[in-house]
Length: 371
Image 1 (cartoon, rainbow, N blue to C red):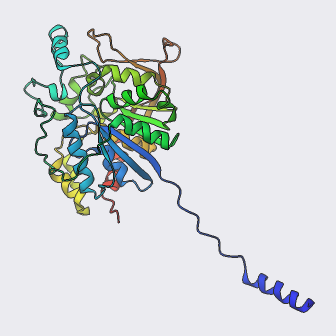
Image 2: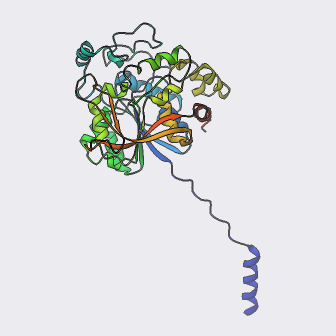
């Protein structure tokens, strides 16, 4: 018997250690995007191309275009990427309080706004932008990237947001890259909503942007802040919603104001850089995205996906003006020593990014082939 035991021990020693079980891949980071989608929008595209991210849904709101047009763009974007399994959930058509009539009255007192989304009825004459479309919210124009054939969810955006956050408490990063009407409604419906979101990342607000690139497009997009440095469209469309969001008890908030965007720009050189991939996405970029626009929403996505691109940030307490005066919709900010202590929240504010590093990261994601 002893010889049998010795032989067994020797055989185990010679066999070496048992092969280790393959470790399961880390869980994907969960995200939801709330946006006034127009064109080939950067945040959903970049997040969908990222291998470690799971996009749970896109909620749409009016802003740059009416909600129904934003919904059509979101649906078409998912069709191009073959991800029609992801729900697109329509949200708010109008702001909580602001209106076209109130905006006209405000302009009569304080001067014209540069951009009013679907309410735009005037251009200064030398802008590279075009009129955003019909004044009727239900009219969806033909999209330059093709019209969708899929349909949106029947659920309401705010209800979807509340439901998903309750199902994944502390796990979802919420991206807000348009006006924040849907998010304010969700917080009003469920006061625990913000506290159950892992992080809010939003593109909105303005501190002190200035022109940092040369050329007519760079000058046009920077000039509106020369005399109104604290005004930015996403907040100005629905200041009351922005204020509700600014006072909600988020675990963490990252603000991407317009400031870093003036150092970025969609260029023909960057678009040509994507050509060799010849994927449905990169091919569509050649016709669906005119050069000249700043990379507003792309900064929000890339600062989260590739934090190393951030070259300057600050910790500030942020609020938004809702007094219906000349400053209606303006961004308010303080360091801790000067804040009013009226439940405003500390936010990480992205002030500048490395443009070359950001474009490298974007190109790698856009050109990635997904099996």
